[in-house]
Structure formats: C-alpha cells, structure tokens
Length: 123
Image (cartoon, rainbow, N blue to C red):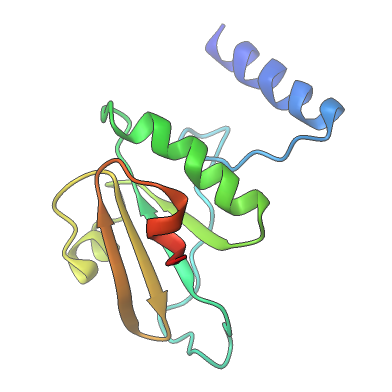
C-alpha cells in the first residue's frame, strides 16, 4: 500500500510538471548519488549543498520542502541520510537537519535546525 501511495505521488508530479527531489532511502527510491570525494571546485563552479536528514526527525520534514525548492531553483543539492556515515563523520554532523554549503573542499556555511532559503544560499 505504501509503495502504491508513493507511485501515485510520483505520477501526479510527473503529470503536473512538478519536479520533486527524492529524499527517501527505500529500495524503490534510492538516494541521489554523491559526487566523488576528489571533485574539485573547477568541476563544480557553483557551491554544493548537502542536506543531512533523518527519517525520524520531525524538524526535517519542513526542510525537505525547502530542499525541493532549492533543487527546483537550480542549486546542486544532495540529500544525505544517516546511512552515509562516511559523510556524517567527514563533516562532523551531530544534529539534524543540517545544511552544509561546500565550495571545493571547504565548508563555507553550516546551518543547523529550522531555517530559511536566504540563510542557506547566503542572500
């Protein structure tokens, strides 16, 4: 039944022309592949935004809509769940939701908790 609901949701989005960022890590909805760790700023002239989230986090739910909005506006954003312990440890994430703005190999902005688009993109 859950799979049917997900399929109906995705089909509705496709038919209405709405783009939706996948934030689930189920078998049917695999996480977005992340860039290799050797990627440099020359390969990504714009900042990369990592959105660290957990399925049981009540504050992450509204931030998923914000992540979708950033994706629709053309920002490079990756949704990272706790199963990616390599990234959680690499960036020292201990609270959820967390947005990291990374330019090259440098974290230029870290936003923890409920936030706005302006705080993430730096406007």
